[in-house]
Length: 144
Image 1 (cartoon, rainbow, N blue to C red):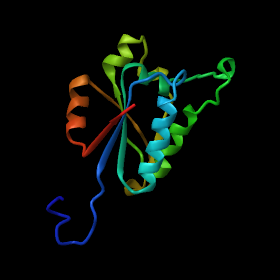
Image 2: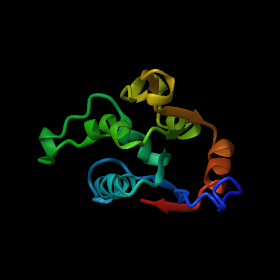
Image 3: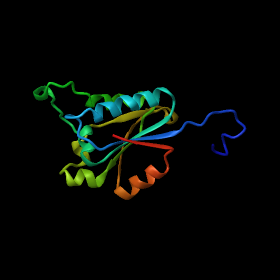
């Protein structure tokens, strides 16, 4: 418990990082991770997401699932800001090795209630080393 929380009676939320490593379709991992993120956010935890390896494809623009007969859930990421999920860490090296850029990803934003509800980007581009530091700062890291 942080020093600031001691003696205040306030419960400090745990920091949860959900690591997305799999492509969005073909397995249940991406959809299951999204469902778990929503559950964590509903319980007022400090929830953030990381996208690396083929997980970066989960945020890609222009996903079309008609040919595989699955419902497209990629647009759900844009609603997570309403649940307080505003940090999407995307690993630069994973994007680069897959021929993607930040411009190939959906625009995901949230309204910052602490800054006059200004719209701010949720995607935070980080290096592999920076992502390692983010992971070290978490209470719980779950990989999908």
